[in-house]
View (cartoon, rainbow, N blue to C red):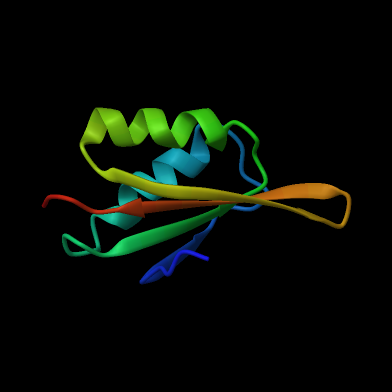
Amino acid sequence: MIQSDVKLDTLGYFCPMPIIMTSKKIKELIPGQVLEVLSDDEGIKKDMPAWCQTTGHEMVGLEEEASDARRIYRAFVKKTKQ
């Protein structure tokens, strides 16, 4: 399991909200810190890597688990710049 410094719960939110919330939250971090984004929106599997590529932050990993008949995704993003 990947270790994170800060967690962001976006459960119940759908595209584009998890990315918008991630964009706001990552501004609070310092370079090198890892943000864990918890989501039940399958779109995050494509959206988060695309957002990282656009913004220059590093996609560290993505974990997927089944919970109560739904899928939960954990995206890990390392802040690389101010």
